[in-house]
Length: 156
Image (cartoon, rainbow, N blue to C red; front, side):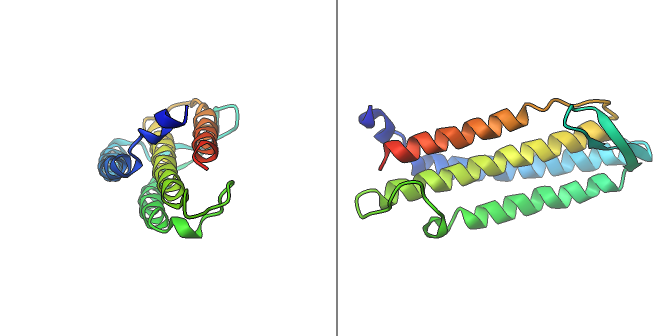
């Protein structure tokens, strides 16, 4: 089982995730701005845990999410460059240091992408006037944390 995990080239995956994250933040930002121009003055601004609208407000609130989207991108790209500062679930030693750093850096970039997708999804749904949204994102984020833990423990 260990050999299959070692076949994953996390460095190459990290490079692709950098590109994907950058492209996503650009496309999502442009999409939100284009939809914002066409949106009515009052849009849904908050969805309850059930996924249904429970508050309406000005469409200018959705522009805040553009800044949050960009901030997530910048913060996570910065954080992913310093995996030495993370807390790990396995002890870090000379044998596993590089693998653990690469796995955790990859996880940060995947988590960043997931959060950006979540925020842009909510913003776009609000701008088009959706009355409810799906709440499967929590399952996806929890699953990615589980996958990170699996890879981290397997690559002690």
